[in-house]
Image (cartoon, rainbow, N blue to C red; front, side):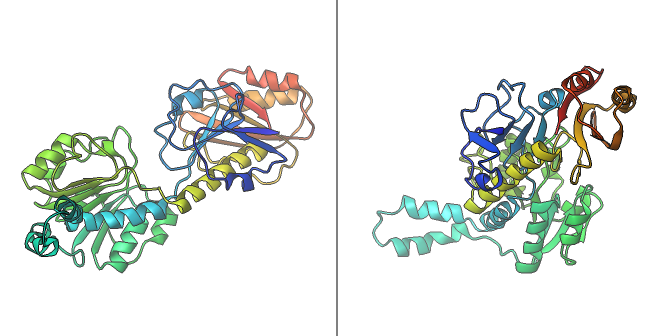
Length: 387
């Protein structure tokens, strides 16, 4: 029986994946085999020795201590693409919010709700909320993953925008998903040159933090409109505010609330609504549950952010999974120890990702607890489990 702890309210669809006969799911589980989480902060959380996996029902994993998990042999999963449609739809709304001062117009009506002859008054005031149409304008899409590809296609095919995309790490899958109408840039500088609109769909890391800064904005066409539905930290708020005041930046729309920008004219801060749809939350929860199930039951690792991809079929024998540091000699030490016990290795797979590696072995006979313990004591081996 596997034990699952939930740190947030998770869609009940997980129970269709984690069957009652094999799994117990509870928010109070003290010794979980796996944790399902959405936005709960885990950096100060004590991770129990029993914990084998954490699955984030969403793409971002900033709330999870990745390095700590790797050191303890805990596989961390996310659910890329599960919320892509929900976020992409909101980005399209963001393009409209950046063009037409819809938010300002709504606020104006509310401020004058008690005025006599409200309709005629608004007719007089509406000129201050005028903005350009999207059709024919140049949109630069930075990052062509699941969300960026959907936004690019919708803008080009459905809204008549001139779309150019940039992504040095684009996957074959996402490249095939792009419309032929979308042009490809070799550098971000080429993509944003003369752009009327720029939308960011890139991960937050040291190299991207503060990308939307004074130097970047000043290199753009005057009056550009920027959308940031990736992470708030991609932008330097003070630089955005200054660019708005100087009219270098016509509008900034973000899905991340920010004190410095919350009341700034021509800035729209949304309360992180990107994945807040019932459909998205259900897809994310189902994917996270499947990732956990496949790992606990078979040792399959798919969509992990800290371990290599491990694609496995039906076991050909007794399956052992070892998580270890990616250094020379470990695979040899593992196989030597096993063969020294007179056990034949029927099949083996070893893959690495950065500093971490995973070795899966299928043995002709069931090892005893002393062998599992001995494997776990090998230098640079972090965790060993019988699947």
